[in-house]
Image (cartoon, rainbow, N blue to C red):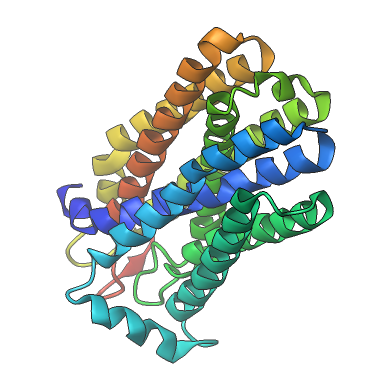
Length: 293
C-alpha cells in the first residue's frame, strides 16, 4: 500500500478534477429547472469558483508527477491511439469550455438561453473527461487496471463528489431555497446514489478481478488485502458524504446548510482520494502474470 503514495499527484488529480467536473451536471439541472433572480444567479456564479478551483488544482497536481513539466506536451503525440493522449485532449477541451462558461457568466452578460445551452455542454464534456481519465489506465501491461471498472469508478466519483461540491456552491451562495425545488432535490439524490453505486461498485469489481491474478512476485489477493482498510475507510467517507447531502437537501436549514455541505465535500475528497490510492495499490504488472493465482 505504501507504494501507492508514489502516485499521490495522480491520485489527487483523479480525485479533484473529476469532482469539480461533476458539479456542473447539478448546476446544469439547476439552471434548467429553477427560476432564479439576477442576484441569486450572480451569487451562484461567484461560488462556482469552487468546482473551477477543484479542476485547476487537480491539473496542477498532475504536473508534479512529471519529471519535467515540458514532458506534458509529449502526451499529444498519440492522439486517437493513446488513451493518455485522448484523456489530455478531452481534459483541455473541458477546461477551456468550463473557463469560457464561468468567465462569461461572471461578466453578467450571459443570457439565460445561452447559459442553459453552454452549461450543459460543460456538464457533458465534464463527464466525458471523467470517463477518458479512467480509460487512460486501461494498459495492456497492467492487467489489474485494464478493465472498464476503472472508468466506471471515475465517473461514479465525479457524480458523488460533484453533487457534494454543487450543494456547497448553493450553500455558500445562500440559495438554500433552491434545494426545495422537487426536481433539483430528486436530481441531487439520484446523482449521489448513482455515483456511490458506480464508484464503490467499480472498485469492488476491480478488487475481485485483481484477486484472481498474480505473478512471480505478487499475488493479487495480497494486494487487495493490503488495501482493504483503505477501501473500507473510503467507502465509509463516501456513505458519509451521501448522508450529509441527503440531510442538506431534505432537512438542513439555512443556518446549518453551510456546515453540512462543507462536511459532505470534505468527506467526498477524503473518501475518493482513499479509493484512488487503493486503486494504485492494486497495480499488478503483466511481467510474469498468471490468471487464477
